[in-house]
Structure formats: structure tokens, C-alpha cells
Image: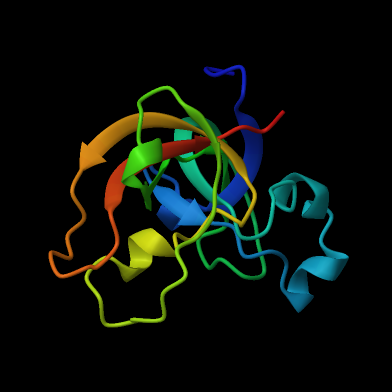
Length: 150
């Protein structure tokens, strides 16, 4: 494996590209009887993953018309907003999504990022800067977070 934290899993061959990010959505009904289920369903539902390696192995799959490929994945860093007072590179935080229901706001997806849950322990990898939404009443910064898995 190219990364000590990487997991080996299966993904649709058409999607199997280094650098591709995806959110693991879990099993479908067709997966219940599949002999490869354990290799395919070894990720955490709702988490965002990044493909870091490809292996030259493919398998047939009842869901993916081109079959599945063996890939190495790690949890992807996630861009999110946090309180600007806590936005220090390298800091360890407990993630809290912003309490805001303005779904048409330019920062909404960063305030409610897919792949992070309330209370997740994270490290601030990088402080990116201001949020895309200039009219926000909150004092927020855009940061790149990496979830602590241990």
C-alpha cells in the first residue's frame, strides 16, 4: 500500500481514477448476496474518500456495468468553515457545523460539509481564508480539515 492509512476497497471501474473523491453511500440491495461484499463495504457510510492508488485487478459487479476495480483510498481532507478565532493551522478541534439555514448562501456547503459530523475530532491542515459569502454576519474562516481517525 502506498499510504499507511489507506484502505483497499472496490469502486466502479469508470470511477477508479487517482485523485477522484467520492462519498461512500453504503450497500444497495444487490450487494447482499455478493461474494465481494466485505471488500466493497469496508468504508464508513457518509464519509468522503480520496483514491490514492490503483491496482490492476477488476471484478464483475451486478451494479457497475464495467465491473469494479481494486483501489486504495484515504479519507479526504474537507474544506469547511469554522469560527475565525479557532482558525489556526495545525490546531486540533472538535468540528461543529454552523447553525444556519440559509441554503442559498454561497458558504452553505462549507458550513455543512459532507463527510464531517458534529463532534468529529479534526486537525486544521490549512487556513484558506475568507468564506465565499461576503454578507455573512458570522466571523468565519474557510479551512481544510483532516478528520482524526484514532
